[in-house]
Amino acid sequence: MSVQLHTLSNGFRVVTEHMPGLQSASIGIWVQAGGRHERIEQNGIAHFLEHMAFKGTARRTSLEIAEAIEDVGGYINAYTSREMTAYYARVLENDVPLALDVIADIVLNPVFDPKEIEVERGVILQEIGQALDTPDDIIFDWLQEVSYPEQPIGRTILGPAERVSSFSRQDLSGFVGERYGAGQMILSAAGAVDHDTLVREAEKLFGHLPSSTSLQVTSAKFRTGERREVKSLEQVHFALAFEGPSYRDTGIYTSQIFSTAFGGGMSSRLFQEVREKRGLCYTIFAQAGAYEDTGCTTIYAGTSADQIGELADLTMDELKRSADDMSDAEVARARAQMKAGLLMGLESPSSRAERLARMIAIWGRVPDLAETIERIDAVTTRDVKDFAGQMVGGAAALALYGPVDQAPTLEQLRGRLAA
Image (cartoon, rainbow, N blue to C red; front, side, top):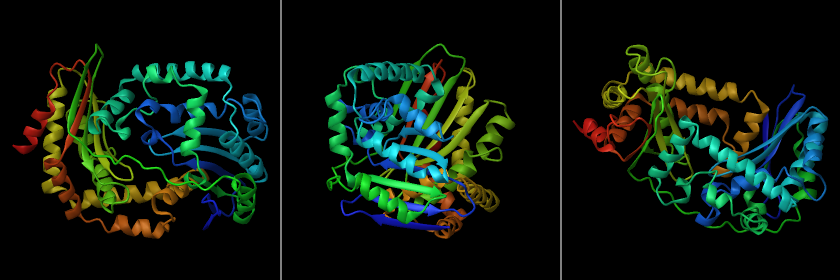
């Protein structure tokens, strides 16, 4: 397998990885324009724009977009994150040019028909309502808000309903003009692809775009905060975040290994101590998340109102204990899980294409897998213990949803860690 990168004269990047033996490919455009790139009055527009891309172009109706890919047995989709918007497809080898043409069409030529804007506005408002009715989804939006208050990275990706209700055609086209420049786009493809062919096609489709200068992004600063939302639910939803490294920090590997050992699987401390031994919950986990300039380690659990205090106390006790007695065996198991998850995931061309795009966005290059494995293997038990110790004494944020009367406050949790 070989990774190749080419940058057009206008800054548009093409990265590919040929995977011998495959008869299909994943191809897409990753745009470095997500929720954190919005001004406050634009909150939710990156996601709205992603929806509108499939509602018709100068060349194709919304139905024709879907039919073009599905007629050849392919699949097309998109997503918006806080730092990226992606438009991608999975097709057979002979249909790669078609997929690229369709993706380029929806990215470059959306018509933003006013009638379709109103239709999709209603769809997004339904999506917002669905999120509000899904406690184990909305709790993470609230945790993000209290971790990064009054910052673009802390705002919901979907945006508030009142803003989504007011977006106009001009707002959408204005965001495209600001953020969809050649230098913010990455064409990534993996599987049965030919690099030189895709570069030639990219030159035809994107070479005319003017060079773009990177617009300033508001730096993220993790803060301590708490949000408690009372609602008559079956469970209390508990989400706690601690400041962590960015994905440009080598400490990201330590944070990922810690979160895996602490709460990443059935053998993890949280799962064994909280669920298996005491039966305090059905779901509990820890995970590491990262952005270009910040990161956080998150702990989530759902439990009954009368058990939330015991669950929270036990979680804090386990966190403190992990800074003292995390074992070599636990760290070795977490390293093995990380490496296996990485390598298994990259057997898929879709995962490969996404990794290529993300690595180019982060580093401007694609690190060899051996380099990543080496960094994972370099993390020691002492590193993991020290990281846990930093969490114990570091900044934290808390979000609670449901019958939270008996739930501890952030101050009480911090006090237990300090005891």
